[in-house]
Image 1 (cartoon, one colour):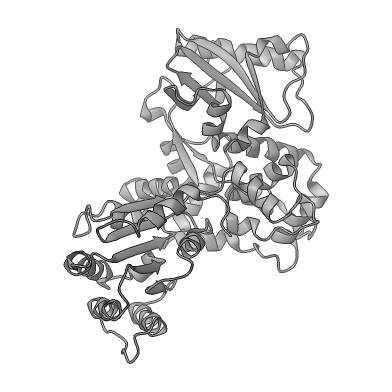
Image 2: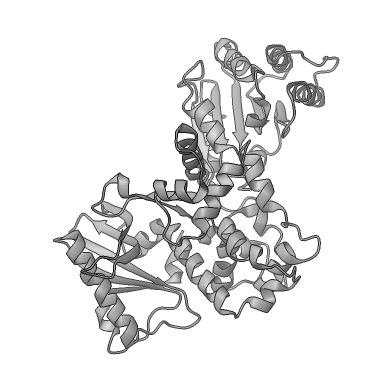
Length: 474
């Protein structure tokens, strides 16, 4: 049973209702549930389905394609020598199929595009020269892949025969907190919203990871079992994640590692200095592909130029890997249970909660009832000078109605209390922000905390207080 994904299911189902043949691409990061979505939506009923093979040469790919043809009913076919021949055999299978829509599902298409294989050209020929030319107009071709950068370059921005040929595209995003809560309820995990947030800080919204959570276990017990126990299911996930998405992951991991050490991120020049990677087109591609895959984000400070932009690590699981998994130097099988009350854990938790809020800005705007209002969502930072100590704002909304919501994000186990020291820090931040930006807008200090703020003599400086419940809005 699929949890959420109503819009994506509707989009896929409508492919069968269109008069013309349809070519749809479904893409998104590894483990996000692309294959499951497609199979469930079409009730596993395909005229042909095939999955490309990871790190397999052309002959192996063609052999696997032949086996899929045979499984789907094309008996007696030999191993094709070229992709043109392979797609010719697919045509034969389709022509022998019963009347009605023919759903063709090719999973992990990027893996099939081995060097000098001619696979893309053959796919172009199949679609442009045959599928769209059929008088029956009965082909629904769905291709899928985790290599977001490949999908973008070879399909979405194709400059050859497939340019403009896609009729539908679906970028499958990780679950939101609302969808994770719905999933936890459906499978009976018995989790509170705080449990769900604590788990989301580690697993993000990746359904595959959530599927391993066990009933009756606390969050700490589940995390120990998934990452730290002997033969833990996700022990090698980090290496597999980057190796599958990127052919040569070394430079990508260098960038990720450098960003993992800086809370607010690094400029392009700072990343080059930290990684010692040579500047140029290849480095630009690395940054672009990490952004496309959702591991990092690029943000420009309010009232700043792109030159001052920062790259920031945003992926929950990757952050957890560097801040927590790599610190388990003694291979403690109960590391998470033993450290969940430590200062290091609390520091990481605060950072992870900030990332969750950045991933749920739509829900925050909904809670503030400004969804329909034009507003620029961004961050802001300024370096220390002789005049001031510098300041950093992780999230702010610059609204069309002349208000800037400047957010302070705090994770705590109880309602958050603003004391004299923190109140002074907030006043300094507001002052520096107004001075440096020279804004003429009204600046509203907005607190987003786990359980709200405690009313005291300092709480009046907060114009609006939101709790973590707003992140669970659909």
